[in-house]
Image (cartoon, rainbow, N blue to C red):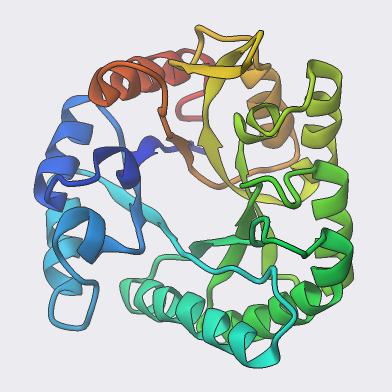
Length: 271
């Protein structure tokens, strides 16, 4: 089995998709996750008139589009507001279905004044249950990214997904975000172990714990157990893609290139 290595397009925000694809091809990437808000980040909407062209651009660059980055915020208690967020996520899922892209990244939601995770957990579960059902009709799997500060916790996320009980709901694991949220190395390892069984897509970040937080660096230059994560996923039969998502200092193109090059040294290629 060949594991595809590439990057998320968000790191090239402001760059037209053909140029993003060409840059990734020059880095010897073989896959890409396209940000679902393409009009904002890449100057083109994903609709029935543009999707065939986007697919041709990716094919010409030798890239597989493995996932789309969806947006939603289910950290709320108002039913009408939650319905709006479900519909927002479904817009990306419909585009993914038309493109025959199997995975859409989702968010749980972030901190808001006066709201705690305990207050929004039940509505959040109900929203993901409905969203997963709608995505399933389209043949799409949702991957919740560990993101923000409200529920950036592996065991809590794993328990929530288990309670939703949808076969097409898992995780888009961002390897740097647990540490970014303030977790120490032992806590981060426990976070990874909690979500690994349900990972459907993988965003690679690396970094170092610093006095004032967690500083992102190119993959392979930091302290996160990236090789262990990938080995553990492959041992579980992981068949998804692996995307660099460099958000450190300096030139993002160079950071992405270095990250992809490192990933190629630790990810088995071919049979």
